[in-house]
Image (tube, rainbow, N blue to C red):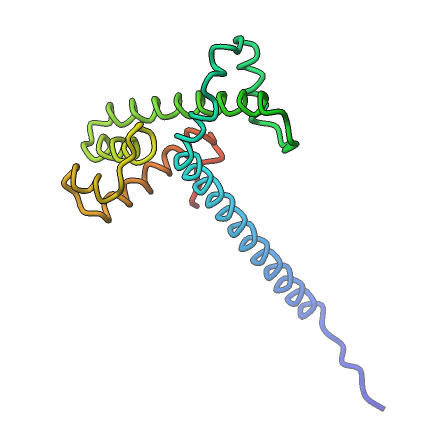
Length: 180
């Protein structure tokens, strides 16, 4: 007959402590992965907003004059709902206009931040983003590099840094990454 091995209370306590620590470590890693994915999502969405900005402006043309202040406020408020139902083209244009106006305000805030920072690279970053995504005449990264007399990699780095700042302006505190 096999003998049963009895674990001491100290051994059981140590096993429990190790198991709890393993679970806590796993949960922390999962939390970090989720936070990184959320941050990546916001950066991606900010880049998409910039990339399609000109299309949004075109889509919302003609609506601005027809909307009352209340309708604009309602359309802006609708941007924060999670419903993704298909709506009429008029409603879509209202929402797009509200989004365009919001993005324009955040771009204005970003411009002022860059102008008041006293750092020449901040002003350049704004000019790069504006030329690439906002101005009526779109410029390529190569054209911007030539115009700004900077390396092509600097153009992409400027866009990346601008997108980080704009993500905070657009998404608020959700756009901020808190590193321990």
